[in-house]
Image: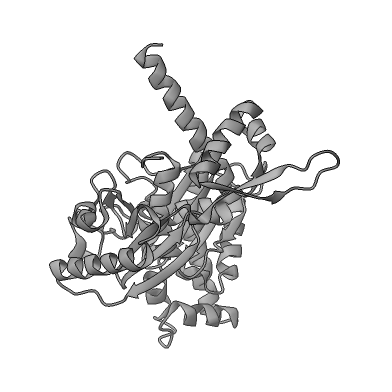
Amino acid sequence: MTRHTAQNGSQMRLLNRLRILQLIRRGAVARSELAAETGLTRAGISVIVSGLLKEGLLLESGCRGSAGGRKPVLLELRPEYGCALGLTISRAGAEVGVVNFKGELLWQSPLSALEPVRNAALTEIRQTLRRTLSRRVANRKLLGVGVSTPGPVDTMTGTILNPPNFELWHGVRIGDELAEVAGRNVFLANNSQALTMAEKAYGKGRDCGSFLLMVVENGIGAGIVRGDEVFAGWRGFGSEVGHTSVDYNGPECDCGLRGCVELYASVPNVLEKVRKSRPRIRTWNDFIDQAHAGDAVCRRTLEEQARALAIAIVNVINTLELEAVVLTGDVLYRGELLREAIERHVNLTAINRRLRHIPVHLSMLNQHSAVMAAAGIAIEKFFQGETELK
C-alpha cells in the first residue's frame, strides 16, 4: 500500500466518522438508519460507532419501537464528552458561557460594563476566561473557544474589523489576544453568523436544508444556510443582507451604499420614525405594545418596516431559492404581528410564490442564545473536522 493510498483511506475514515457524528447530532438515531443515510454497510457503521462509543463521544440511549424482531438501539451524543466556552461581545457589554457537547448551556455570566480602554477590557476578559476555565471546565475536555461580535470580522485571522459604533474593538485580533489563556482553538464569527449556526443546530433551522436568518435589532444582521451548510463567504463577509438596498435613491448608509434596509427597518430607525408623532414611545417593547393595542401610527410604521424587510428577504429568496426565513433579535418580543406581515409580503412578491409557500418563523432559542451561539462556533468547528478529532 502506498503512502498516498493510506492517506486517502485515513481521510475517508475521518470523513465517515464526522458524517455519522453530524447525523447523530440532529437527534437519536439507530445504526440501520445511519447505514441508510450514509450508504455505508451495517458492518462499516458498527465499526465506526463502536470506536465512537469507546472514545466516549456517543452513548446508547434506549430502543425504538419495532413491529417485530429486535428493537433498534438508539445512539446519541454523550453530553459529558466535552464542552466549549463562548464569549459574546456587543455594544451593551459581554457575556461568557459554557455549553456541553450537545450545545446545552451549563453556565453563563454577564460582563455588563467592560472597561472603556481597550487593554483594560481585554485584561478583564482574560481574567474572566481564566476563572471560567479553572472553575467550570477543569474536569472536561475543552473543544475550543468561540467569540462572536458585531461584524464585519475577518474569520481567517480572527480580527474584528470596523463594526459601526464599536470603535473600542476595531482592528483587535481577538484570537491572538486570547490564545495565552485559551490556546489556539479560538474562533471568531460575527454575531449573526454565530446565531445562524445555532439556529441550524438547535432551533427552527434544524429541519431545513436552507433558510435565511434575519437578526433585527440595532442593525440588521443575517445568515444563510444552503445545502445544510452556513454560507460565510471567502473570509466571513457573506450574508450582509442588512446592507442591501431597498431604495437606490435613499439616504447614504455608513457602508457607502444608499437605501440599505438597515436604514428603514433596524430598531433605532423605526423608533426614531415613530417618535415624530408618538414621542412617549421610548423602547421597542413600548412600540409593539402600542401596535398590539391598535394604535394606527404604530401599526402603519410596523407595516412599513415589514415591507422593507420583505424586499430584502425576497432579493435573497429570488437569488438562492431558500426554504424558509427565521426572525430573531429584539423583534422576538410579541413578534407575531411583524412575523405575519413579513410572511404576507414575502409570499405576495417572491418569484416562486405560485409553487410553494415560504414560511417565516420566530426563533425559539432562549434568552442566552447569543452566548450559546458563540460557544457553538467552536462546537461547529469540531463537527466540521476543523479541530482535531481524537
